[in-house]
Length: 296
Image (cartoon, rainbow, N blue to C red; front, top):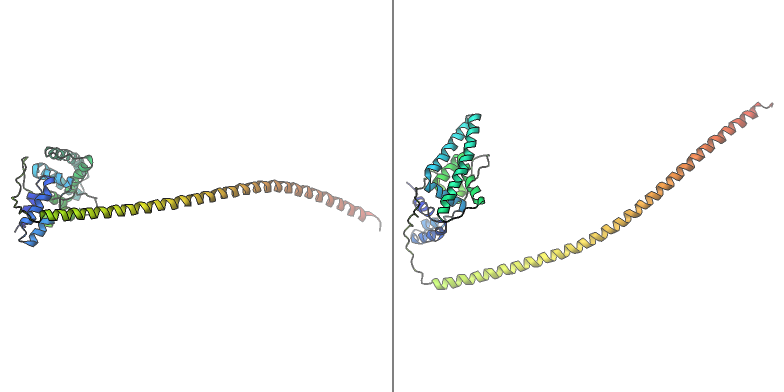
């Protein structure tokens, strides 16, 4: 039996992005008699812009998406069969196809009045690439219930659980839609007699929150200023120590140069002393020889 939340989610995630949250909240209120189901409806996450673009593509151009997924299947089979030549050809085709389909998706979003930046387009292309290289990601894309973009690291399976609106969405296929905005679910909004009081209370809470944020920001600024003052004082101290060390180094270098000069002089004296010693030793030897020759 199909989870009724899937069919309801299929309607919600086909809506323009700006309409998602009010429609979801109204549906949760409509089903408030079933608290468990209403909580599940309320828990449905608003999709990121990239996820919404992929969901739009799945509903508006399902054949193009199926072509992408078919190439992905062939790519995985070639990889499993270690067919290098086919793998290289399919890899080139994959890159060309994901780029072309991403461009198509941007065009569909433009028709809906939504501008897709290069950064978002990169996320869309990364999601299509993940769907081509990973079977689980392919099923997630086909569901049309993405809340976040997918990416494949090339190591292990793509983790799609956090990117799906409903865990059971793998295996679900989004219903195709044409360019006409899909009919919104019939909503029965009951007027709230306490709406004004709740609005005032919410506004008061917002003011309190804003004041708390201002106080926190002021405290953070004061801490930053104190840190800067301390660091500037430390910098002055270190600079003084550096200057002192530079002076000490200069003095040591001067002492070293003077010592080198004295060493050269000492070596000259040593050389002269060695010469004198040799000469006197020679004279001594001659005198001793002359003494030895005299008759005793």
